[in-house]
Length: 370
Image (cartoon, rainbow, N blue to C red; front, side, top):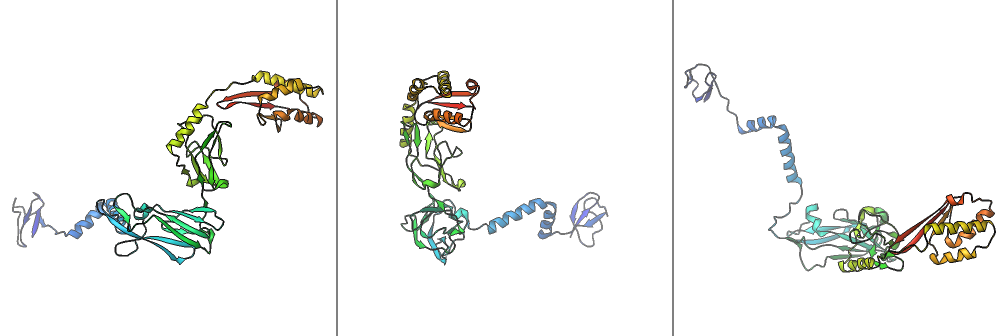
């Protein structure tokens, strides 16, 4: 039995008949309580509550965290099973281990498959479906094609000579709207039209659903597939797209570097600075003179017709009050305005002409306040 001296703090062995400390011969001592391992653990937990809670949580994650991936140097081979028997509305994709048991789903095990799902209906409309973990819900009747990878690039793979494609023909879901169909968008190689100064991105599939950006993932998306080429160069030319209503599924266009370089070279070769064929001041003065002649019911031909050579059909769009017209429609628009009782006061201060020079030529913006 052990005792502790309260005078010199010595701990010594003794019996129930001990009467004094073996070190200082003091009679002021008391027995030392034997504490087992369980009691010590309880005491530690009481004194370290936060650490104990964290340790407990970590142990739970280890126990319930699902399948643990194999060590990096240990090869593992799975089989693949597509279960279409549970419901006409969906199928499950299962990995099967060497014991012919289905592996419970977890991201770290199934992620290497990189499932991509397409559905083509009877009208040959093609849609993508986002898998829900390893569950694929049919959003339309038709043929389902599931693409998958067969290995993770190192030690995990699928048994057999698989091509990574599974086709499930003629599915007929009871509730086709349970999952949203994402219209597929397929783009062709963009081209540069030097005559129109436009970058054209062909949409081979999903034309009415496509939203496209040529200046990056966070750039300006538009439903048109034609883009102005001004200020486009190697530093900002980057094509992304998504299907209408599915902005969170943006994809980068896989543009070969060779084709991309061809387009950028075409842009650079056409980057010739143009000059305005008629100055802004001269054009403004001629338009003022034409409008005054119209107002006086006088002939405008000698001023008007020479101006036509500077413009294409829609260049420029002229804003007159709340109406707009082309340069060719200007006289009839002014005549109609005056005929309806309108006025053209302070014309010289209320007309604005601004010329614009770009790599593709010139344009003018004309605004007339009335």
